[in-house]
Image 1: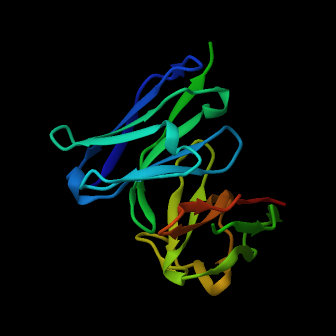
Image 2: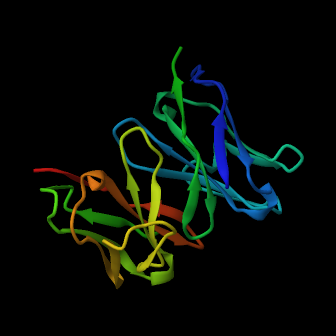
Image 3: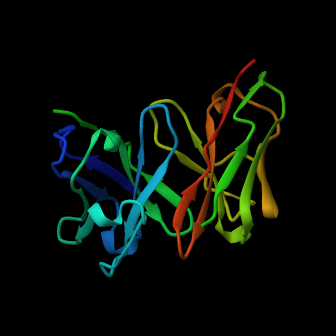
Length: 115
Length: 109
């Protein structure tokens, strides 16, 4: 059974870099397309971007300049780095697999940007 | 860029009633690229419908999707207590990637 788990610091200071990891169990990371989605409290979903098994990426244009996604097949992990964060980046961050549809999701991790 | 609009913003119904949720795209989209998700408080979204009409694995048949072009509908034939949640439509496009609608909250009347 495919399970995803996000992890990373829950608190990041403004102007610093948000770093999260998504770990897969029950499958191989190179079998999926990997997406990151975020959701500010009480608001809707925003797609951040995706990374393909090849390592190629497809980023949301509104975040592209601050984003780096990578994958580590040896650890069955994908990573997200978002630099120069502000309070507007405070949200629950989810990883999810899929191409057109997002069929497996992690439980999400809350990241707060605050001094 | 495709913009998705969902209506109504909130739908207040009683258990056993029929729920009809609308998702409208700013331009015609392929049905293959239109999805619906359910999200309950404190939980990740769950895929309900893919390709506009196909139920995802384990989704009860009281959930159905329909539509084409710019207008899509999610119907819950008879609301169960566990169906009160927020529902999002989603589009995938090769240029813009994944886009979500703003959501429709189905709450208890």
